[in-house]
Each structure stands twice: as C-alpha cells, then as structure tokens.
Image: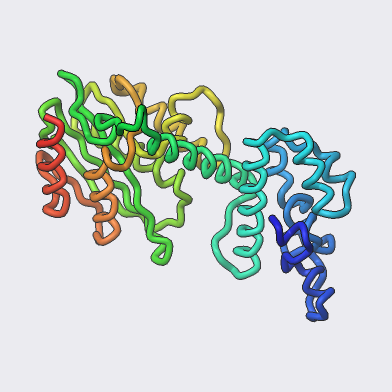
Amino acid sequence: MLRACNDFLPTNLCLAKRKIPIDLKCPLCKCKDETILHALWGCRFLKVARSRWTAVKEDWYKGNSHFFDFILQCFSFLNSDERGLLCVVLWRTWSNRNAVVHGLPFDASEDIFEWANLFVRNGKAASSVLNTTDGHENKQSKIWEPPAQGLYKINCDAAIDLAGCLVGCGVVIRNEEGLIMAASSQRMMASFPPHIAEATAILCGIQLAIDSGLNPVIVESDAAVVVEWINGGDILYSEIGVIISNIKNLLQQIHCAAVAFVPRSANQVAHCLAKYALSCNEDRYWLEEVPICANKLVVAECRTSL
C-alpha cells in the first residue's frame, strides 16, 4: 500500500517514467494507460470484482486521478474492518495482475473479492482460536472429540501442492467410540485456491458417508469461512457457490446434526490423509482402517478424548 501511494508500484506507466521502454497500455484490458489507480481499481477487467463490494462507491474512483487521493477518500468513509479488507483486495488484485503478466494461473475477476474476504475471515477465525479465557486454554476445543451416541463424525481437510498443481482431500469418519468406519485420500490435478479445496474436501466427506451408508452424521472442518458459508443462507457466485450448493444438496440426502468448525489440532487425522493424498497415484479408500501414517494419530486422539 505504501509503495502504491508513493508511485513506486511498477505499473507500465511508472516503468515508462523511469525510462524503461514498455507499452503503456494495461496488460489486462489493453485499452488505457496502466496507472496505479487503473491497475488496482479502475480496469474494466475488475468491474465484476468492484460490483461484489458496494462499500466502495464508484464515484470515489471516478472523482480522483491519483491512487493516494482515492485511498484517502475511501479511508474517510470506511470503518476499520472495511479498510483492512480493502487493503487485502488491492494486494490480491496486484498479485493477480502480475500472474497475468508472467503467464501464471490467475483468478477470475469475480473471485478476487471472495478470496480477500475469505483471507480476512480466516485470519480472524485463527486469532479467535488462539484466544484464552482467564489465562487458561480451552482444552476441549483443541482436541478431537467423539460424536454423541448414534452419530458418525466426518472430519475433512485439504492440502495443496502449488508447484505440482495438486490438491489432496482427506476424510475420516468415526463412530461414538472413536473407531474408524471409513476414510479416504483423494488427489486432484488442479490449482484450487484454499477455500475451493476445503469445500471440495467437505463435499468428498459427505459423499463418502452416503456411499458407506453412515447416517446420521456431524461434519467438522478447520476452514471457518467455508463452514460459515454452508450454514448461511447467502447465495454465493463463481466456483465456490457451485460447490457450496452441491454440499447443501448432499446434506438433504443424509441426516446431518451439524456442520462445525474445529481448529487444526482437532482435525489432525483428516489433515494427515489430505497430505498423504498428494503422494498417491490414485484415490485411496479404507473401511475400518487408515494408512499407517495416520494410525498413530487415531490412537493418540482416542486416548485423549475417551
């Protein structure tokens, strides 16, 4: 943000001012000179992203010719949470622009705001997990706990290998005694952002429960915002909206007591299976067992929780 406000961001126009021979046009829209304000907010490629967030008014952009003036006007009207979100949106927008310039995978315009919103919410959720009450940690919130009698608990997690363009989804389903009923490690050739990967893992978990005839269930994930989206009534757009809709449709086929957020420390077996999936050449499924790499975690969690 500081570099952008001081004209130090290497847009095409800024590079040209420093005597670097380069086309002044924006690499995304190919229409206007790439000023900092244009690159971070005004480009028509970002029109859908801007429409996702009505807190920043269109005339704030049109009424300013310099990025610093635009930011001053935004910060005059936005609250502290909205200011933080704006900074993340601008950061993601610049990263996305660079990905386009260098021929790397990049987000669609409609995904930029959702990614930034998820980033901020996950940060807040992670901070809340670390908070303590009266100086003492809440132990029960940080360990895996068996479900209530008659329920099966589905734990889901995702792992991402950016270099290999791989996503691993790990699922483990246990009964009230902590015994393994079913588990899976599924690998996908994809460059999913984290929220898409986590939602896909939840989808895999519910489908495994249906295929295994395990019902009723409770679903747990360490992706706080994805859990919030599933439990909420908002209509989401782009890829994440499709996956959340599919999850809700599957939940109608099975009795689900709850979809809940848990910290990573209470989701270790699923996380281990997700990482294991990245090393597999094919999808793996187990009934009443898990691979050796996850077995020690299962035993440890059972000893702690039962």
